[in-house]
Image 1 (cartoon, one colour):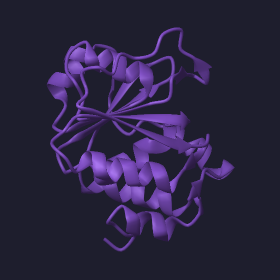
Image 2 (spheres, helix red, strand yellow):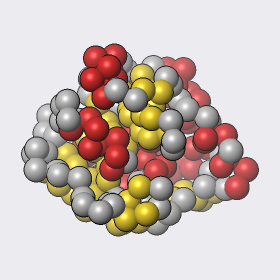
Image 3 (cartoon, one colour):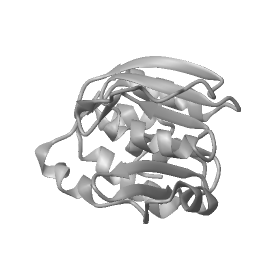
Length: 176
């Protein structure tokens, strides 16, 4: 549905919030719900709490993990396909359903989950948090508010593919 163009790669390296190395401090600062993107982030958060939604792909920095994240504390698990440097319709649909429920849900991605931070930010209610990894630095805590959503909508609108359909599927648009 969406492909990451080269022109956006460097922009996406800038964190969307403060970087934490202590999961307890991050959880104390986070709003609810918490959506975790990435295996290492999810594993760290699970030492303190079970995120409402977690997206994992069995890899860190494109390298397979020696042992997978223990997802047994989640109410449900979903499996989706999402190739590297893309946001698939399947991922968007799973994420939309997962954020909009009282169950804790782990989404196991065949491919790569990195870009899920963007749609997760649009789907998470205001005051909620999206947490993702910043390589070699720690965990980024993104607090969802209208400013963050507006920035993410703008980024998604600049992706290759069908941004308009993706934003519509997410229940948002560039005009909002």
